[in-house]
Image (cartoon, rainbow, N blue to C red; front, side):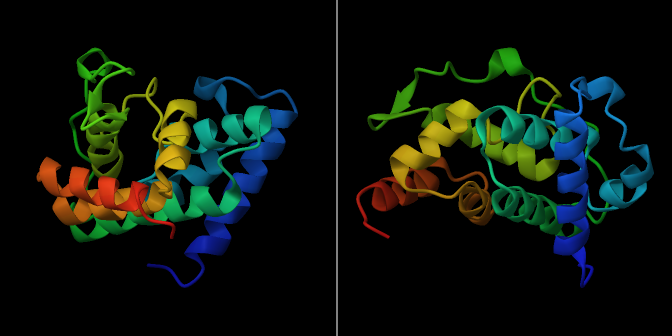
Amino acid sequence: MSYQFHQQLSRVWEKAVSLYCAGNSHADTFPIENDMPRLNSWGIKKIDIFDYAEDWCLYQEPDLLTFVLVHYERYSYFLEEQHGMFSQEQINPAELPHKSEKVVGVVWLPRILPKARAKLRGELPSEVMYGCGGDRHFFQTNNIHPAEFLRITRRYMNDDQAIIQWVLNRKNSQT
């Protein structure tokens, strides 16, 4: 990782927020092309920047620190697991579990699991955001930070039961 990763990514986020607030509210034409070579070298796509800037401008969340931490987890996975190569796959949004589905009584957990895996692998299509309003509600309700959930998902990648148990433990804790 670059020594200045967090500073450089913060600068891009601040620029993106300013651009969005100034009326650049379309992902396809979002004017950050000069930043894309560096962002792509970190496994980060334009839509990742746009989505977080848009939600910040509209809802005042996720904040800058959450944005940096989430994308640090993606960057680490991109370098360490994908060896700097983008996946050619994308999940199909129609195949995501419904928003009201539950597992062991926890709403959204069946949906957030494939989204977190796809975020780590860079396989989210542009119409699906990791950290959207529904995700944020899940994280707040269950006392989990979005970046922490990515770290746990990476640790147990395909072991749903381990992730589910971790979520239950966290939900019941006060930390």
